Length: 400
Image (cartoon, rainbow, N blue to C red; front, top):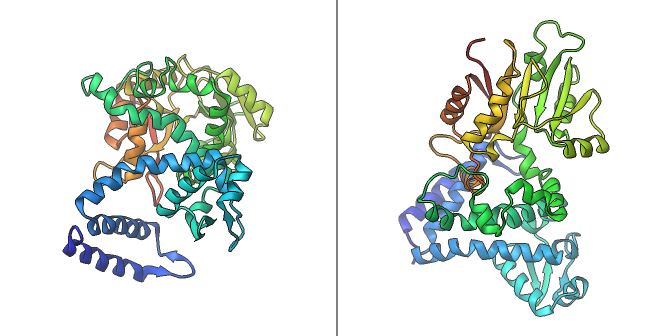
């Protein structure tokens, strides 16, 4: 017997209705409909299971992730032939990976039960749509990065919060990440101390899952080139911009953007960025956002996926160091996820708990406005895409 027959039938009707907008050539008519369909399908599985089955399903998601990480360690996603219709045996995987055949069989059995890979016979396997997502190096490394780094903190979060009286984490140097990783190092120092972690992090950040929704809704050319641009005028400073990928995308999308573009990050990162080659017209400047910004009176100071890593207290320090460099026409542009006050999607609120593990936070519109107000800025606009929750928060000096 299902957990809730009436609910099951209701959701089936909803799915049937939503499926009418599905075109075999182009998919769903829009992303909102696709999202509704996915949510209804997930709710259908919940309704069809018994309550005890749902509880067991939830707790075993930890084990599912462990099975995927084990398969990544064995390089199974690369070993299984990518060609359509081709199969491979457990013995062949074990021989290539240098692993016990029994271990391979048990891991693959778990993955197949979770619909990752297809079973082509006894101890024979083939890729399916879900497993093929891991063929991309960026996707594999994104999973490794989250599992090996952030998830250790997320796993330790209940214990950490209980120890700290269930208070919101504010101290970068004392977090669930420290507890889960058994380290005295903060997240970024821990990352830099391990070459393999750093490689997985950098490659994983280029994954479609982490890049696709980061398309910037801000019209840099129209907004930053209003009025004449002086020959030496700085129009955009990418604060904590890593190796310059965001500025490179901005240059590609707005080739007519006039003025100087400055990439700022710590000296070691800037050296790597220069060695790797900067986008034409981009200048590199070593700078620490915990110190006053050396680029004065720029038209815009751009923070892309920087502030969600930090608590409000730390963000106030970072932004204050920017405010001290701003001129009357300057603005800050904060490219981040915006958490809806109601009906926030699971992937976003679960990411917020990942950030909680390192004492960071994904924020709502109200929280962004309050944070800017606390450092002498006013939020003048939130630039939004038509779909998704990735936005650009624009703030200007209150007294400008």
